[in-house]
Image (cartoon, rainbow, N blue to C red; front, side, top):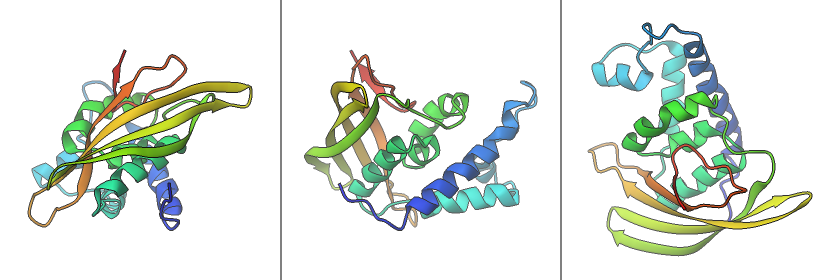
Length: 189
């Protein structure tokens, strides 16, 4: 799989920014949870400079091709960056998985075994605004091979005027006892 080589710097910077933004909420009192920047935008409230910067990065990572959403999400998995994975998700999947990402401080996966050698094995066009990708990958560690895995990733196009971009609306994974799964995945046993 070939990824755009100009995005790694943005991915790292984006990961740092989202971690910095949410770090302050870890010590907040349970009754004093500030609204997320996404909620502020919906409510028309002004953003802090850091929230504006974060929103700019998320907007900059919106992709115009469905395969790009999967490739960037895979890059986030490979780098254990929950922030990059989160940026590729649909609004509904973000809402569903946000607290799980926050609990891990936006770091996903595990150091060993790690995922490697992602490859697209099937691509299905379900409609003009829906694509389904099947990807396989290996689970590897310096001390052994742990088999592989398979994910089925549904990508949809946001059809709102002036906001036409692709996002991941579903990730279904076959269970492997050696694998650490990301917060947005549905794991089938």
